[in-house]
Image (cartoon, rainbow, N blue to C red; front, side, top):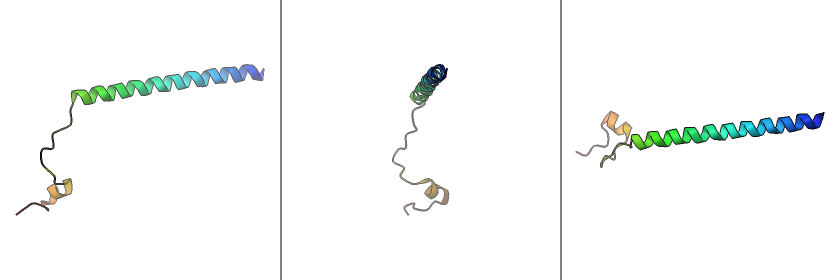
Length: 61
C-alpha cells in the first residue's frame, strides 16, 4: 500500500512541476511580447538623475 501512495505522490509532483514550468514559459513569452510592442524610451544625452531633475541641482550654469 505505501508503494501505491509513493507512486501517486511522485506523479502528482511531476504534474505540478510540469504545470509550473508551463506557466513560467507563458509569462516569459508575454513579457517578451510586451517589450517587443513597447520599446524603452530613448534617453537622448540626458545624464541627470531623477533627484537632479526634481531639485534642478547639477545643471550647468
